[in-house]
Length: 604
Image (cartoon, rainbow, N blue to C red; front, side, top):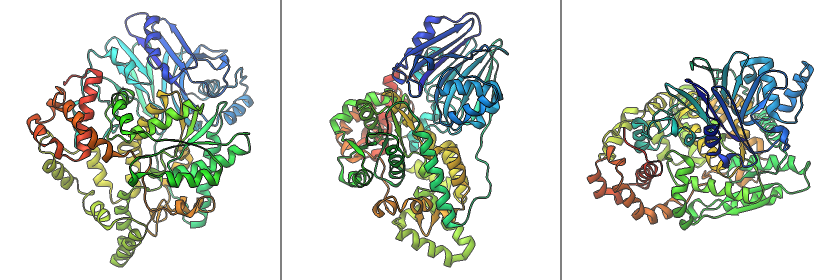
């Protein structure tokens, strides 16, 4: 895991000093070393976080020993040992123990087709001097970021937006994205960023840049194609556990200490339990687990996490950020994330990463992706209820409705998603009525598409994974972890697990009213029943009510003095009504104002 940078100058040689300076802007991502390689009008930079092969042999940019092919790479190829053996059988000779050299050899052997063989997370650029191109790629689900800016004179890419700001004339807000965020907190749903002129390579895509002309070609190499899935309940649970266990096994490969995030929910508890069992057989120390504890009783999951820590014999660390911690870190969080985010819960994850690094835990497993792959959100119940109606009429519908209530879903939420979420018109009208002070409270296009898909759970899941939910969570995860030089790994996003889960019938993923039913059954012999059949869902939630109510005076001052925000709201109305707004809207207004101040953002 690392920080990367690259620069292609279309008018002459690259300045090595500039490449060094912009590479070092992400020194926090790679505290273990820095490498720069400049050749004519191409420069590659790398900040190293040493995880596999800690020797200097693993340093980057790395060159193939035989061919003029260079790479700068951020990520991990978890199945690199298997690929290495396959490539050796084809005649390749390896000189390091790193996955970087395996990736480079795979590209030389299979070209663009190498991406289909990788199990991992990646964002890389290869300067192939044989055809004088830059071949860039991002992993299937976008776990690792790849930002780029393309101007008349230069093309640049990097792991973070701050590296690319020098290539745009000034920091200008993308009006559409700011408005989408203010209306409903949506972010990361397009390939654009909040900064005009800076974009993202989409997940599951590669890019080839002609070094001589600067022409760019982008193509998709991965999509979530539908196919038939298993339907036998016992087989489904068994296969699911085997896949998750193997995904966890691969993600324990490391030459540094590995631990896990532990909220106390089903997903993180499953990962922690499976990882601890495997870790114990290969290490003489207990497996580390880190929990962020909320000071608000209504969303404090410490008691659940304690059960897993005791049952699995974990070395359990806790962090409990206070309001004072949050208030003093709000600006830092925005600077770390680089773009607005929808709430202060991100502070809890930030504190987990900080605790990990301070205890020498350099790699952390996490349960991200479990909800998107196994129907873990209440909004999926609408499609499930309609499925029962179509298969068994009103009797089937009401039977399913009762089952959902018995599994802990409030009837009001079921009705809200059944009759509200599937109507883009109703949702748009609600926002216009509620947020009259916004100058353009229109519904984001991706939510209109989401409304059209609410009758089809699988299509909802694909949209959540590619646009409306997972990209946002992955951005938070990457920026928070890499700020402290910590690599996070996500077993639920092993592509084998994702494909298997998405292709299961909806009636099995949401069975008898229980969300994520196959995972509950798969893990019930390893987890306490209070967790495997837990009804509520929290995650690393911050004490929003305590923090934001106390922070409202400071938020108000920042909001009413924001020149950027004045472009999007009726400021006089905001001044009159701010303290009557819901907490989410107060935060969103504050976050945009703070973002504008942190990065000197101007309205377009």
